[in-house]
Length: 267
Image (cartoon, rainbow, N blue to C red; front, side):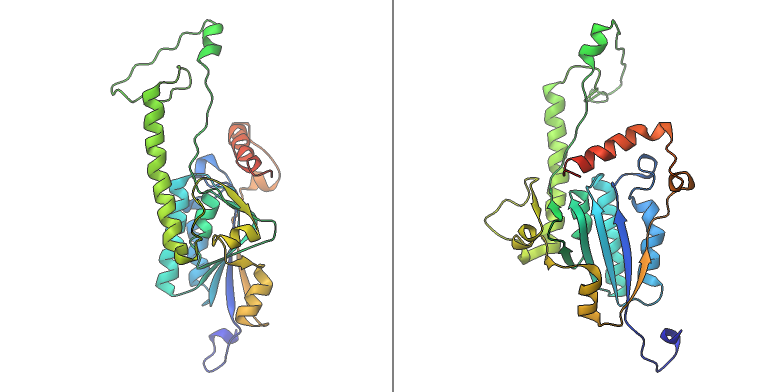
């Protein structure tokens, strides 16, 4: 109450945004991270209660490049509009798109065992052409446009398709690199290839300038804003069925894909 009374000094307030899970468009990641689902939460964190800072608690193996970019852009727009500092605190992992989100902060703090980096682009899939041929299945595809069936998993790979995919991946990779360089600037170490998709743990990431130090949310914010700092937490609300532990059959493929994202980092 006293925060709204004139001439009464208020205790500092830090809004805490929890960003945990795979990054993917809404229908593919119920309970995951995407700009549409996060927008109301992010807007409230920056606007409600006159916060002195915003802290991001990140635990994500990445996912969609576009959604990562959209979320990070929203964070930066609001930070500049409200003139608020943003701090990122990494839990288990901030890799690939997860690191893209962390880089939107002004400072990145990690645990001794946090996994950080994976600044690269990956595409994966399966090839079924031998399987369907062995079972006497004939694939019929009709397109208007030479590249419309590019990378069809039911046809043999084509060198032109692979070359085109790598070209597209390079464009996304270049954008990722530009984002990290713009946000981290001179803090990034020279003489080490930071953009080859490699990952680092804790202090290794700090030594290379990918993070600013080893530190945790509460003690670091108390160090910066005093012992009386208050925290306003904001988190994603999961659908009712998910909260009850129910799994829909149609989401099994998405669940497998998400587990594969985490498994790449031994989690």
